[in-house]
Image 1 (tube, one colour):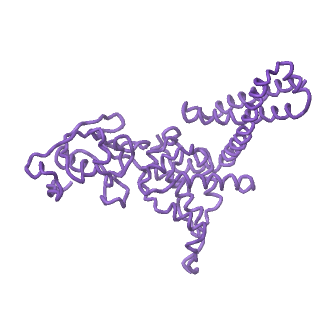
Image 2: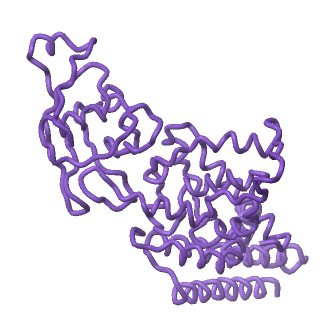
Image 3: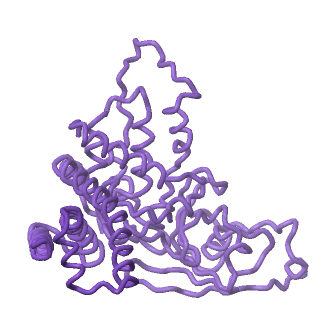
Length: 127
Length: 258
């Protein structure tokens, strides 16, 4: 509990971290807004592909055919790489009591893995 | 503690009480500090009985060592808040009829605050966070200046109307999931207070307060569960206040003024 926590350090820590915390919040909300739209489009695409019995080759061919889908999925990957680590950060803090530099470093690795793996997959499909 | 005083007979007491055979019901009350346990008492069941009446009866007639806190008894001071059957409430304004659904009453100290003893919690962290959220009014005028003219119908003053009635009872703080998970979260009451002052045109704290409520553990930590709004005995909405702070912080950040 915070019973013995003195007042001033709490306030001073607040001054230092305010901008970072606010950026995390804004990026989390902005990426959520992107994902809300993109996940719907993604699901609609899957349903279309299934209902039209598109083969893997046909899907890859369409990915090659224009810049829209690679661009769409590249932005999708970026939004996920921003959103997921920030969400995990809150989960780690609130449910597991994990915070600090080591936790943030681990989350940065997760972000890079998501970004790198996702963009690699998109680049592979885009040919 | 003064000499125990006999409770006067209630005008609407059940017939059993007047005939000297009062029905009783079991009440479980938290005893000790964090490592304590519930102790059961049999308390007379009376008409229009509040939970505070029950606690007072236990202290006056059954165990004078029971520690609890109250002052006004009429919902003005906010000092008698406790956890009643798992929910934070003002005990003075809570009728036993309304909460003892399972015929048992369980009374515990407020959650999310250190227990001093029995039903008394240490409110220091709660009010420390008001201070950390810059909950003090910082005047911009002196006694030599004219009185500020604030239109009651202005949007900022109306926003204050929705928040100003907080009396700092701690019910919202004890009901908040995020406070339980994240001990440095400022909590609904402190943030509601900050939003009140942000809307006060006479206040000069400005961006310093916004920084204080934007930091780790500030307004962005709110999950919008609305437990504070549901539990507030004054029917305020700290959730709306926190949403206002989030909006303002984001705007200030984007404009490079945070």
